[in-house]
Image 1: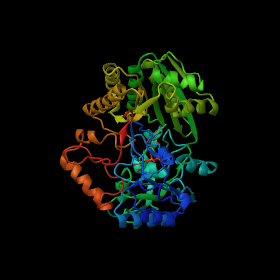
Image 2 (image 1 turned 120 degrees about the horizontal axis):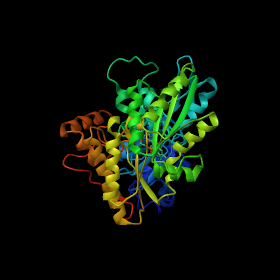
Image 3 (image 1 turned 30 degrees about the vertical axis):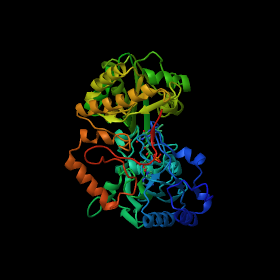
Image 4 (image 1 turned 90 degrees about the vertical axis):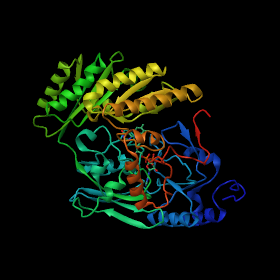
Amino acid sequence: MDRNAMADSSIPASLAAQLSEIVGEEAIVWRRSELKVYDCDGWTVEKSMPDLLVLPHTTAEVSAVLKALDRHGVAFVPRGAGTGLSGGCLPLNAPVMICTSRMNRILSIDYGNRRVEVESGVVNLHVSNAVKAQGYFYSPDPSSQMACTIGGNVSENSGGPHTLKYGVTTNHVLGAELVLPDGEIVNLGGATEERLGYDLVGALVGAEGTAGIVTRATLKLTREPEGRQTLLAIFADVADATRTVSAIIAAGIIPGAIEMMDNLIIRAVEEAFHIGLPPDAAAVLIIEIDGLSVGLGDRMGQVGRLASECGAGDIRVARDDKEREAIWKGRKRAFGAVGRLAPNYATQDGVVPRTRLPDILREIAAIAERYRLRIGNVFHAGDGNIHPIVLYDERDYDEVRRAIEAGRDILKACVDLGGSLTGEHGIGAEKMAEMPLIFSPDDLIVMSELRRVFDPNQRSNPNKVIPTPGGCVEVSQPHRQAPL
Ligand SMILES: Cc1cc2nc3c(=O)[nH]c(=O)nc-3n(C[C@H](O)[C@H](O)[C@H](O)COP(=O)(O)OP(=O)(O)OC[C@H]3O[C@@H](n4cnc5c(N)ncnc54)[C@H](O)[C@@H]3O)c2cc1C
């Protein structure tokens, strides 16, 4: 490490030397040109670079690093793959970033007890790939699963298209190894589902990096269903598509997934992947039924009839795995396809009761018009978890301002309709100011108290999730919104 080049850094030279000794010099990034890669996650509206990035290889190294930071009173921000969509790993008053990407081993697989133990930097999809041959999978499947890490999933309580039937991350984490901000290693939960005492794993899942660094997790494995059928229902009217979602659930059918894409997204996906989506459709629903093979066809028939009754003009059932995979490829890569439409986009993540989907989509269309913006919708319709994608160009200051305000109006509309601020992307830096829309000052104080149980001095991912009383955060670290 070049001490002169680090002269401007807020990290004391003695601390930098200690960290380098713990993890090795090749596991420290300090050049500003290299740190640039880490100045934001998928929420690109705000950017801020850490002064130093540490890439530990083991729990022992994480513990030694946090002890050294504790001695110097230096705050840190945990990072997995940086695919978060709410600025969760944006360094705000946290000079050191700790990235778990080198802690990527699957430690043990136990089919008898249907569980797997992994290091937190393991990529989500690698867990399913490791157990696929034995007929198992890890069910939380964020669309980013090819890149995002289990540590990030645990911290955001991530979901995915199959959350509707199988649940979110919290339903699949049995235990976790956590390094507290003072370096102490603790084990929460365990290898079985029945536990005594307070549900500390429950408190950790969704803590968004404010409790320390998750280094290992014990996850549940799910048996692959015997059969699966996937259909595409095509609609000329968005409201008809959303009514279909409620009609299916009301009929007592819980599909593996019900996903929706509107016209803007359909066109982007079709242009990118050529999977045969109808470019003129107002909306498509992807509906997957899974379970025992017996009766699967009947249930699919019932779903198709319900979609037709609600106004679907065309129903296409995937004939084989190849067609099914093509449909899912289009859905899971939809965010990437949107990159063709505008230089930048911000993905919102609100929730409404699923019967209010027609209202929120109408409201989003009105907000798009009011702010003169293009907003596409691709989302987990079965959960009422919307993902409006607000397109903008970060070089246009006024457009960025309008994109941010439109996002806030969308979240407020979700809350007004009886919903929530986030289904799966977390609060992060992005939505802190909106927390009082749902939580009273007393609620926020109780949350802060819980946070202090893990992190009394608030040095793990400071200035995130919980707004300070009387307003938002005061951030002293250089930090800018996109066009500034
Ligand atoms: C194209 C795309 C599609 C997406 N689709 C979905 C989706 O379908 N469902 C969904 O839920 N999300 C989705 N996301 C959001 C994102 O992928 C998830 O939030 C994911 O869990 C983040 O994982 P990560 O490893 O990238 O975490 P990061 O972005 O690196 O970090 C996320 C948060 O977790 C904390 N953190 C990370 N690792 C640790 C650790 N080891 N210990 C403590 N804290 C930690 C960070 O401080 C931060 O607060 C999508 C993102 C993209 C870009």
